Image (cartoon, rainbow, N blue to C red; front, top):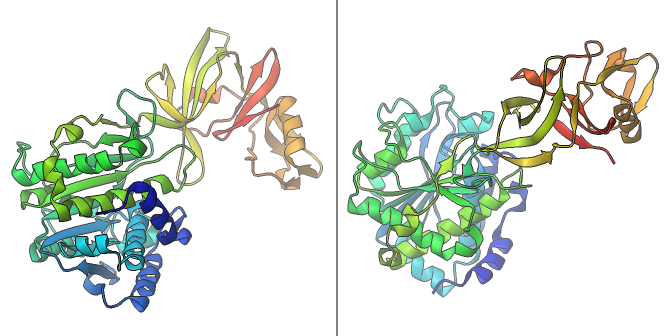
Length: 445
């Protein structure tokens, strides 16, 4: 019998690869970890190069177990979605460390695991969703014009897996239906046809999701949702279902204060481990589809990186208050994504600004060398300056806060323009109490 979650958690901590706690995972990370595993355990694991990427990089499959029931796992078919790749490497290391345990031997006598930890190494190398052809592999299931897509289809045909785990990352801005919290994990048993019919293997995928959610109920409560259920003949999960495979889609989301999605990485590990145990024991068949069908929906664009609520604005034409949503961009900048009544949004960072007034701020003209440390910057902000003009090369920047180049004083209320990098001050009783510097919130004591 598989140990309880408390015991498994300690075993996971022993197996987890700490070096993979980082924003992105590259092909070399996968190669190095697979090589390390096989150097100390080539008896239980079998490695096979199942194909090559468009640029000729190897696509590797690891196999362990000798049971009749085949399970296929694949990750990072979108090159910029690395969370589950780390979880699969953790799982491989976990299996190596615990291979002698009777409960694990029992599982591996009933199932065979086929693991492809990185389907799109070219995209992973460039941190892009698409492969080197510029094609989204997960929109190539029908046309099969990508070598990576053809590799995955060949695995469907050759292995004929009973179950498959299709592992992705989703946008951090999904929130849970009827909540303002982020979705940390989203699940789907994808349809296999336009009618979204319910053949037994798709029902089994739903039951398996329900069984795993039951195993993880305490930790996953209020953190999971159901991914959008529309059928797409171009998507590989939908293709898998159409071929009679019980396919489980897992989308890794974000949590508060978890930039590298390590919480989702951990949840992936536990879901995959419990999933393969349920398949080995056929215990998922005892679970109905109710838990799966009761999942709240995944709400797209339901969160912002920074949400400012109720900021008061005074202009020559009118006085009003509004909410402001700001999202970070991949190039380290931030942009306003939405203005107005944003009660439907949650935020990873939220400021209640109902007592604050908007102030566009002024430009500080630099005419002599200045050491810009935190104390100096705060003093300038409190004096009404949030941008810099003159000879900004004279600034010796000793703080990570953005240094924004001004265009004169006073500047217009830039938050009125969507798609700009937001910078302004916020006043309480005429004193500066907070600032937004290129989308970064600074609160002043």
